[in-house]
Length: 539
Image 1 (cartoon, one colour):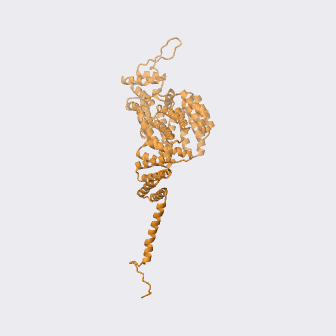
Image 2: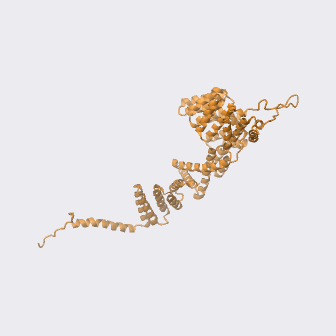
Image 3: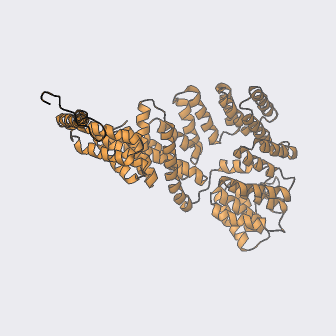
């Protein structure tokens, strides 16, 4: 078979040797070429290629493979390539985040931020990891840095604000819980005490001394003012109350209680009231409990004690207990307008508008001349009518009617001014605050309201607005509302040291633990901004 063509052998699968060689050889050639190109690539190129491979694993949810690639990319990357290296650390942190390995997330994000400060994405990821680890202060600093960077870029990120508010509230709560428990009781200003008793239509213990409780001592034929001869601790306390010498009231009531005198129930209630005014709820509650359980006591005293305990629960954010006390007061003293006034306030606070209007109506039915509830009823109806323009106008007309019928009710003008401000009728709102100040020139809060209106109206830090708020402090150096307003203005103006100074003044004056929590949270945010500016040079 000379000259004959050799026969091609077939593989077991029927593939020729030539085809088999091609099938085996091409991948080998490609592998060799790939290896050649890989060796020819720069270290950075290799790192970038490995990082890209890790990204594909990450997108496929293969986080362990992604971590291996990112780790290799970090090892391959030249140390002088800080920007790329920081990205590889940040990518590995993202994979660790999916595995909830929070300590590793913090470590890698810290590397990323150190290599490329301030690395916003890494800062935010580290903030969330710190939050999971319970490192609140570190979380607040990181999320504050992110917020400032977003502000400089006109970015609004709800997630950033959510984390910031959550962690600052937690820090505020921790500080307030300890501080509030151990705070020294402080008597509020005379104006605050008068306003407190003014929220009752008929507070039995705030009434002036009655006949038989004071003795008229004639000193000449024309007569002189009564000279009070206190024959008991309670009567002496009442005398001090008439004289606005409030600091002596608790001790005199204690004498009456210890001696089990004739006015023991009244003394317990008066002492409890001033414990509440000095924010000493722990001391107030046992006294209120004793009066409520005194079946032989005047029903007005017991109802008043229930209302005050209910209001205390309301401030403590315990609405169910508050409602129970108000309902019990209504059962034992059905014609007491104060019950419906305070229960209406609770429902208004809880957003139960129909129920609040119903209670304000009951109060008005029992005491038509109690102007405050006319105004509160109108205010409740306004909140109900916010999405109904015709109804809103009816409410505005209702306020006009109230200030016409009750021209000496300062709170009527105040509530009307709030509504006018919400309606952006600033000029008329300003007129209403002028009326408030004319009626109550010693009420510091009215100056703060007017000052804040000026700032909102003029859209700038006007001298008039700030002067009015400072005037409030001159009138009442215990006006926490004024210090908080100035602190907030200074915070927004980035005058952080001044803001902290004002917030620290407020902390000692706040009335509730919740208010104190809020102020401590603002303080922590200010401190965090100062620290972030120092660390990263962010203004």
